[in-house]
Image (cartoon, rainbow, N blue to C red):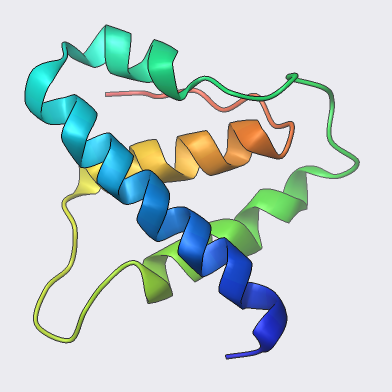
Length: 91
């Protein structure tokens, strides 16, 4: 793990705590609205979100635990929105 990834890892764990908190007390449509951050500008390339997803899948886990799919998808949604992507949550 390189040092430039550390802020992204801290960001994803912080976002995960927020997502878990929201999911326990808020209906899903309102959770998605609460996670909708960023300007929604068009990113330079669409492939920039792929490494973000890979990093999330590798680092948002512990040796004995891994988050469920919906919270993990919502964390990726928030991180992608923050970087200017326009992700969609499909269930």
